[in-house]
Image 1: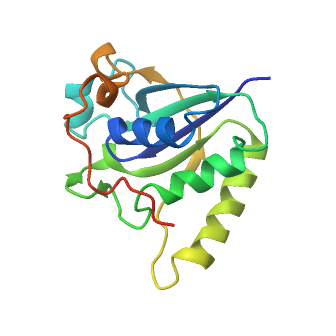
Image 2: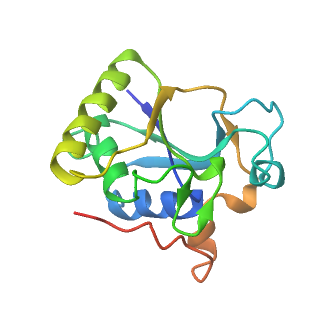
Image 3: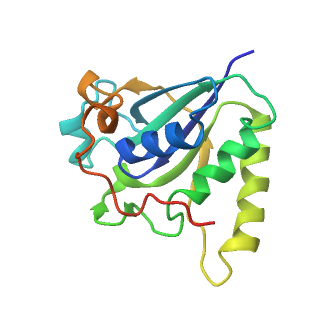
Length: 166
C-alpha cells in the first residue's frame, strides 16, 4: 500500500535531490510543490514573495519496507537540513524555506513528534529544533521545470545547507 510523506526543508530542489539520492534503490516517487499556505493558486513567483505562506515542499509516495518507512523518512529529513533555523536554510531566507513536517494521519503526527524528540536529544543539545509539525493541507504541484530540477540541471543552484549531518 502506497503512503505519502510531505516535508519542507528549504529550497525544494535540494530536498528532492537528497531524498532521491539516499533512497535511489527504493521505489519512490517524488514531486516538488507548495503547501501550508492560504493562496489557492500558488506559483513559484508568488511563493517567493512570502505573501502566500506556502512552503516549498517535497511530497514522497512510497511503499513502506524495512529501509523506507515513515520513521526513517522523518529521521532522514532531519539529517539532511538544519532544523534549528527559523524560516531559512543557508542563504535562502523566507517563510517558504521553513522546516516543516506535514503529516497525513494521526499515526504520522505521533511518529514525527517522537522522532523529533529523539533527534533533539541525540543531535541538537544546546540548540532548539524549530520544525513545524502540522497537518497536511492542500498540495499544489510546482511548475514542471521545477520537477527533478537538479537531475535536469546538474550545475543548478543547490542550497549549501543540504548535506548529511550524521
